[in-house]
Image (cartoon, rainbow, N blue to C red):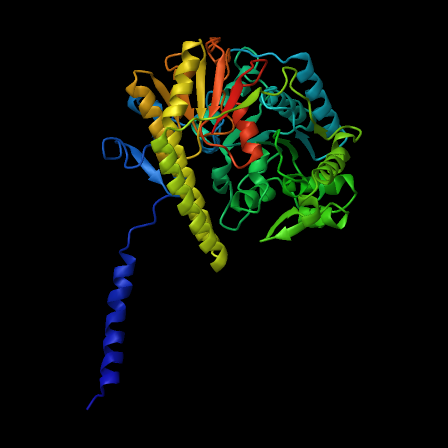
Length: 537
């Protein structure tokens, strides 16, 4: 009698041919890229999630390897035109690679550099000519660093016979990417770039798209422009991607030229890690020796120490502002006083933004509500300290800020309405959405005042910005501290200008970070346009 195990073995042997036969009938794997017949081209599309009208349009196919939809034909149907790849995007770069030819670029009204901007471009190019791998542009907020960066990148690419220029920008990408696209187009001759350069503008959050599965870059970057470089001051995925794309840990002579940009590089020198390779080159060291930037500085006497995996001031330095300022000056001067200068720090000729504190006089009921919340906060913080529960303390702090923010909403609205009556357009900066931005905007609109909303994940951020800039909404409520322009007299791509109505700004919620506060004020206090700010407390 056959045993149970032998019967199972026989069944497996008998079933093997059937499995082999079924495997042969499997359909062939789908192509990884579109096939382009002669006389046709491919368009890569940014379709919304779920397609159009709940489905994928005819003759449109999704390609997983490209992470994009594609249409192949002689012309793109008009319903699909709004979803076509944008000039200078990574999607357009892929599209051009597939077609073997470049699609149309962007157009914009010409822009010209001021004399001081020409001087900055010359200084950056001089460093590149001397084979330095990087320059840091730290001019004050609103001095026109974007225009300088584009002009310098074009000149350096021409100097080195380079072709691919990567630009990374901060959020919101729906505002920052069009702004850079406009500036690149504005420096083209007669709206046609004849320099054969290939620009790629990407949000820093999207840099992973440029990395292959093996962790290496998908493309060779010749010049990199890193806007709002303070985004890369901590160890993170985006920082890791940037280091690989710009070959920061590689030999100096094989690295692309990198132009980092931010007026606020960090709270202390230990956060300037995006400059590590440049400091290594200046000191004649291999890049890897400076990869741990905070450690390299500490070994050279800068008063830094590690805390929870991050570099910070030592206990002694925390108690001494002069010691901090001296350390910052020493580290900065290594680049700033170098010949040629490797850090540019031009001050804004219109001076810093006027700043004041507006004290709020609460009603008796509001005082009572605040005192109750303050008492709860004190109890929670004491319990958190006793139990060493950091999360509990942070939760208590957030809850207090939320409650205090709600109490002050009507006061911020009243201050904004008073400035409107004085002839200003008003900016209201918040950090939180549900307990600050939303209630402030809704209370203003309840009084019949149109409000532009630039907060949360609003897909209409750019159109909201333009509503404010064109004066259709006299108030903007926003929580984006960097990379957007809300100044008077901004020049648009079509040669028109924003209103010349003076701006007035209010912080409804104070920023913990001085860097973000300075950046926030620079949204309207820029390019010779003065905007006074107040903190409502």
